[in-house]
View 1 (cartoon, rainbow, N blue to C red):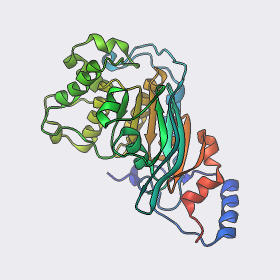
View 2 (cartoon, helix red, strand yellow):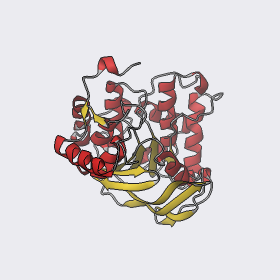
View 3 (tube, rainbow, N blue to C red):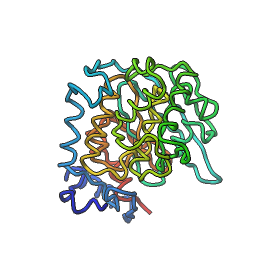
View 4 (cartoon, rainbow, N blue to C red):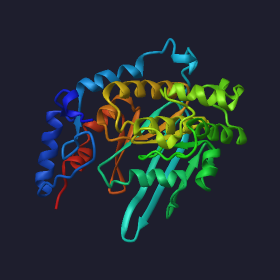
Length: 329
């Protein structure tokens, strides 16, 4: 479905004064090169849909009185955040390409941190290093007070959950079996569901069904996962990650393919999970969603951190503007 017909005209994310400063800076440094940057209209100018953002922002403030099927505790217990992830001097190269070069990043419980940047900036490579799919050349990753290493499965048992740009499920297994796999992993590792400790008292089947409802899946739990449309695949993959009882949930472009109404529900779900103590780290190209949901944002460009701060600071940062609008010869 095209986004164009259902959304109002997009407006630039940066204010006029910031753009003028950036234009002067780029004029001094050389001819501007525009670069594509994936979905959300990022074909050269980073954009922000103000009306869409206005629908996301209330999710940061409002308190849910109840949720469908009692999927989460009816009363939020706002949890005080603590540092759960510390990345220092992370670097990896492929041949002569430095995909990551000296990346530092922190994440805290009860907060949502965003990782953004143009295509090829190193965002997914960063996630792959955290989750154990890639081994960095140097750097240290500390997770929940301990050095993080081992296979992706080992890191999952320690509380690191992840989804992918393209959902990765066991296609021949039923949806319920995919979710139960996560529940069994959580129990085997002695994990606690920080967002709803009562889930541990449920059977695997009941727990899987409850988490599926929590994330908005309304399909047949007995259907083969491979038969689902893309949107449901993404929803079920999120449910499976939560079934593993993560302390940190990493989401790679989770809003891709969602319409505005679905995205609004998704934002409310993530804010609820965060308020209940879950740490969330997400990569997302939809700038309206990023600015409306994240507490803190780190910007990568060519494998390096070029900016970090709260959403309002990132929107005014000249290095970020230059990275998205263009760069010198």
